[in-house]
Length: 147
Image (cartoon, rainbow, N blue to C red):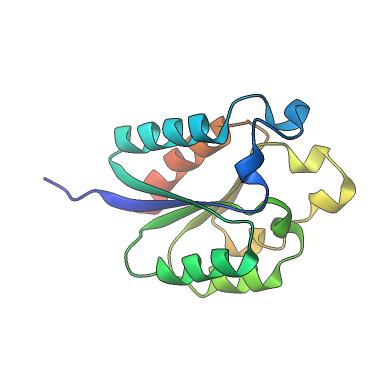
């Protein structure tokens, strides 16, 4: 029997407020409900899935450094850090596993400052605009990237 692959879903600032803030953008469903569904989908794909959320850039960077030897892939919704955190970008670049950038909203259809991702060049790809399904699509994308 093949060992399960370890996948980290890393959630940045304000993503603990999904279902509470900007419901027109992020919907009514709670963070807890979405996280449960992510874990269920990961299990179906044969992954062990950890989910980590922090509003602190340094905590996210520390977590990225920790995953280099024990995880095979990362799904990252960096929230607003996506658009300006060169420190987060450098952390991703330092870890030789695939990262998939995810956003629930379509960042390219929102405010102009959201159109540029400084982390995209060091990620395997970007999925945005499909609500919670963006996470499920990213889990499927990792299947091929981790082989």
